[in-house]
Length: 511
Image (cartoon, rainbow, N blue to C red; front, top):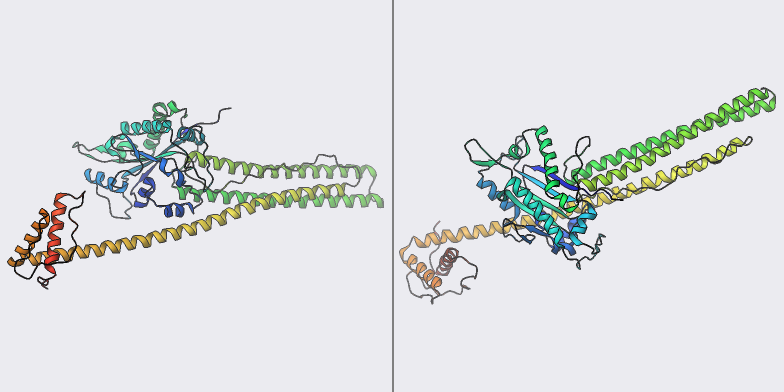
């Protein structure tokens, strides 16, 4: 029987775009960073499949992921500058959306088949999938999605289009700037032009987008149109926000199970009370305080009540089963909403609710009921304890992973601080060199000497040793022009080098 094979498209409005997001999309990571990211159990990046990732560039062709010299956030900033975009003050409540972050995907099995065909993919952590090769169908699908985006938003507004094959399910990240025209005809960043002026228009546009994507792309690859968001609590959340929501839902389910357990305890108390009444009734019969007919009528009434109470016990046990089913559906919904999200593990406990299959005996009912109650209590307690244990283990795993993630981010912060300090020192050195050059050029005799040496370096000639203001002999190393160095940059470097050579025996800076 055919299971649901649906396309997936999710879009987040963004008021900013960080370097960390850009590095993740383009996989500008080293092996250590991969390991750090995988400390979070919600992540699963397979470094042995990293070489299979690709992107579609501005030329509309397929390239290796991260082939562009300029990083994603730099290209975004350049496009925004072309459109004369000026962001508001940081933290402003009225900060408008400047870009849309898309994720395109589909049914897990179908997208894997498009990417790897009949090859076996091991999704276990630490598995070696380096033997895999990329199939042409995933490239055709990505190209069709790219063309769909070009038709709607314009090629120049697609800042990035990355295809990831190193996670649980193949998917596409697209970073797009929504552009519209003012009355003057000038193009500018305009969210409302592409996604509506209010929530109602946005909902209508989103429906049309899903339909259009299905008709123009998904239908060609056996991917059905995604379900409508009407009547469903679908929220376009980030990964961590979604996990927090899932954690809250799990907590509510645990509270419901705890409530069911309390109800069962109350039902068992009522059953014990009825059993005590049966014992008292038999005592009255033995002592002759009640007629046989009255005894039979009351006994049957109490036994009916006990059976009714047991039926309620079964209902509560069935309710636990339904809660487990809800958790299973929640996990499936997470996979549908975004295959890159891996929430709390859903542990489904397989069990058969205890049932009374034999008829109550005419005599010794109390012992029979004790036996049935003991069996029900043991089965139920075992199931609840197992559920509690499994989710406590998952909670502990999430906490440890979060702690490791914070430590990894702290290390990255320290590295960025070191890079900043290094760049600051370099900037100070450059500033000193330019000031020294200006001081030297202000004195005619030194200026002649500096320019003569710079001219010799540029032309590849021997360095002259004459000139006022001191000799020009220097042990400073000079490697000449770099193969990829531009002419203007080389001339500036020669001039600074000449300044350094003269500076060893020339003037001191004026203060």
